Image (cartoon, rainbow, N blue to C red):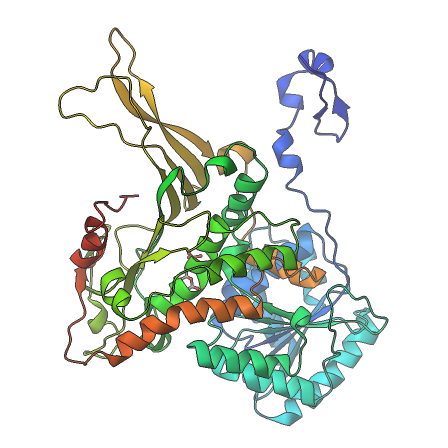
Length: 541
Ligand code: BG6
């Protein structure tokens, strides 16, 4: 037995010999040690545009409080909130207090809150009014000198996308942006970065226009385009699984993989977001962003480094190898659908066209399934099947890699028996983990075979769930680490894959019906056909 050290609760190390005499309860799960972060950002002022919105209360403010008490953020960390509401600093603090109490993960204490709240300030204004930016500049000057944020500013656009261009230009015109052309370039007078929520553009042309507009003010290393899927622990774990283990890469290619299925299923409907969703639909809302991110991390080549450029170069490279599903391929390889009324988890729900705020003749898709092919040496001939939808039977996100069957089976199967091939399933949510389906011999005389599961459960192994995606991503933005944010060419390439589909759909006559599916089912019959044509079936996760 090797004497490799074990880390104890007190932070010391024990050899295996000493561990044998140590009561088990005194040692901690060594996997948990890595959960503590050693990444401490500089003090900065975060400016949130659209601070009265839902995103700030549900996600941003709780994540910032969690970071403040857990990392911890420097005492000078400050937040300047901006919206049209007529709030004083104190009213703003009081609304945020409730949001943090309700949604933060870390325990809420009055002491921690009071210290955090001292750094909260509010500026009222309209995003299209140049005066707002003058007021903001004055406020930031005071914060910088009184709280020691030293010109470090993180601008966060939590507004509807129609304001992105205007706000970026407003900041530029008011001299609030120090342009910085390269990553990690510490400057005496601080840094300015901008974080932009999805959707980034509505189609290829608008995304390119927006990229150009933001780039006129901020250099690319200052722009952090958020896709919260990249902040999910289990999405990052796909990278660790692939590139920190020797076992899987040798079979991660067309010689061994038969097909890959990516599912992002939601049981929820569109909630109160009809206005946004009617314009977006599932292809823009989920496929262009989250699902293509999942596809890139699973299909890309190994990057040389875990850093912003190396990782994103590989993601862009693989996306560029995806065959655009254009022309006739759209009819053959892309299925859209819209939910009708039905039951989800035993509760009766209305159909999409009956949802509040939805056009009764709406042609917006709430479901998409598609087959993509990647034309490169690794993946040639391996279909990637993607599907996503609202009002499906349950919430589950998973990537399933189905391997080929063995070339020769020496075991005799019983009459009618087939042996299902190996499947490696990465569950992104819920029940985060990884399972491998393998064939095993059933105990007893004879050689009956049966598939069994080898399971790794994220929560059980590490003893606690990972932080919320926003906690991770906000910290990365403060640290100036863009690895888990989308770069301009990534956004561009993703949209260029979606654009041909959008064009074909836009050209279809409005009299052409859209397939429907009953709420609480796995999508329209056409989605089953998509795989049946390839003699395959969707998994039932
Ligand atoms: C958002 C979409 O980006 O992601 C929503 O706009 C969707 O429509 C959500 O519900 C899903 O995120 P998660 O983290 O719940 O899987």
